[in-house]
Image 1 (cartoon, helix red, strand yellow):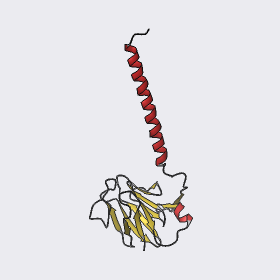
Image 2: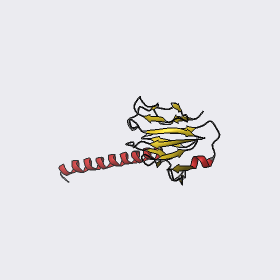
Image 3: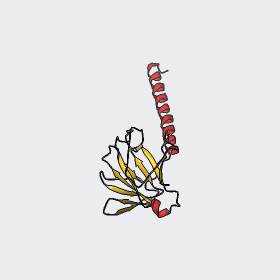
Image 4: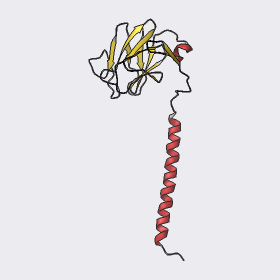
Length: 163
């Protein structure tokens, strides 16, 4: 059974079965696949199975459709292979078929009708770690406190007479 499993926090565990027939995806309840999240357009994209692959067609969405972080051109079709990540706005979904996926299927994205293919390396599109962000903010906070303390000390010493 082919399905899209939502990876985004707040929607974790949610999955949608995909079929050979075209299915509309969007924020509105009238879509075959409804994802009630603000970054997903009302009518975001269309999906349909073609063999073991999923064909994705962006419908001119505001925040775009991405396969392994490569943006799909509006109104163009692209191929999503098993194990790859489809991002609609800020919502990430993994395409699963229940079959074992090869490394090549996870690393190649076929874009458009001309069969243009782009290899996606793990490091080029890796997400920044939250640990690095936390360290950055912690160091910034400590420096801010030191600067404020130095300014308070300087202003208090300006008003007092020197011996």
